[in-house]
Length: 229
Image 1: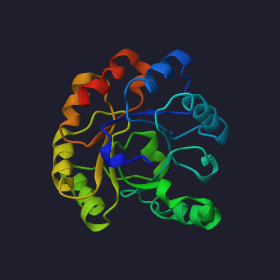
Image 2: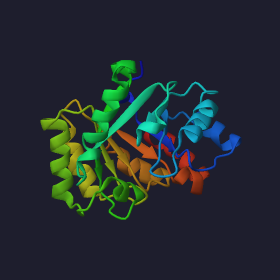
Image 3: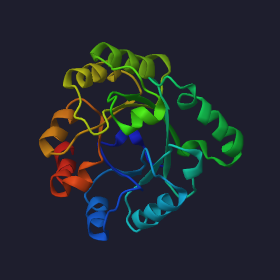
């Protein structure tokens, strides 16, 4: 079984975006710790399965980040289950999770499920709009959500998501300080396009996520692996 707590770097691939076989091979053989499949819109069971089959040609762990019940399918090594801590819509905190457990709970292997305490810090992102995030967060807000994830709820993962925007370093640093003595892994995602940015964030976050950049700046994004290893 794969252990998220030992990872440093993951690439997140969007099933709704095109990636050619050559670039996908380079991603999967880059030395990244895992490939996460997930997205905020246009994600279907069909395009999830297509990407799963293509990634499965390589030995890299393949993870599904679940954003809807309809996209869930067997075959992934792990399933990331986001609970959006700063959502104003209870469906994204526990509602959809309850529905999934009621319908599929008996079929799920609990050892493959990883709950992510999500904190979405970019109000303009598709993820924020999808999940009903309405409040702009400052450093103190991020710190409070980190405490909630690590000290109160004791979740396995706190995911600080800036979703396309490079994050506030002070907020990242303070979240890291809060989580340092907990069993909660601190994952950061958002706006990392270069090795320098990966190295900066990697000083604080346990795991960095590189997503959009792999489609926009593939050569630079591939360098992010070595920057944090």
